[in-house]
Length: 475
Ligand code: ADP
Ligand code: MG
Image (spheres, rainbow, N blue to C red):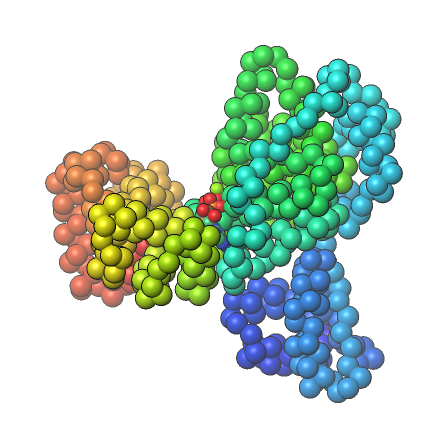
């Protein structure tokens, strides 16, 4: 890479950074690599076609202004789209099977085995008449795009979802993986995409299924000796939505069967939409080959919504339910429940219920009581397992090490911190904490709590551990 391209781009970045939100900058500009500068044209490398389209749609003006500042009126920008994980040296993301071909595949009811491009192969396991079986989509019409409010936290995922539903199987986001924490809208968005596709393409077979149910069906099919029917059924779907794929972790049989179904659908230009509570890099016990498939398309995160978005979600919900509520109450709730939209809605519903049952007026006092309950509930949700996981991740050890009998100082400290936080954040007794963290007795836990208290007021480094972990553990 020439120095000049880099310098020009760095200057552009400085300008861009000043003009957009930090999150947007991080998402859209940090991943860009300046490649070359020739004939007053700056070539930048972007990670995907989607990325390029997004930049063109949202930031082209900004890019133009910044580049013109650097290179003058004749400045040009060239995008180089870098495809990662290309499959068989092709670019499956941009490749589209012609529709004539695709319908041929379906009407002949043939199965295309893995990596076999010969579409004439007959599937020996055709279920007679399956083509006439109407597949119920299992979609919830109440989860649609109209009531999935947009905000910074979900803009990428939402737009990607809209792009997918406009052209299922025809965009580079295949699979589309929506990931994010509990109650942030993954299921809602996944349904919304399906509902919108059904709306636009009524002839398409759309199926929503939770990974859990998928797993059960698979296990049943093995028991009943019709695994192939199971696979075949799924291979008939045009748009497959699988919710909570993290559920597949550790289930190698189901992963294997899903891998085959996925490949078949993908090769035939069908759309796959997945949701998960983790980013692909953080998924554990999912086979590498499956993970690499997840990364083929787009992984879009649902982040925790900012205050404005929370307020508009609440207002929208109240409006749809025909309930009026003073703004200061709405804002109070939105200010205090931050990390989970389901709880946000729950608090408002409970507030409405409380006021109508007890014929109480909805005022700040009542709102405080309700919110407090919700916030407490959230805290109680932290489990001792979770605490041990977070603490051991933080110290880059595994949970087994944390629980081990060793007296190595840093491990002892990690264990004591886990006990301290278990005491602080859960309602578990000292004895129960001890038995869950490496089978210790209650006196050890008590000692650990005291030690942590002492050390955090005398040892700076230790204090930092406590602060960092407090942040990580606060939901
Ligand atoms: P997840 O599957 O991520 O746990 P859900 O999709 O079940 O979360 O969402 C939890 C609740 O929050 C649902 O009632 C959903 O309708 C609501 N919700 C989530 N995101 C939004 C949004 N952007 N706009 C409106 N409601 C939302
Ligand atoms: Mg869900």
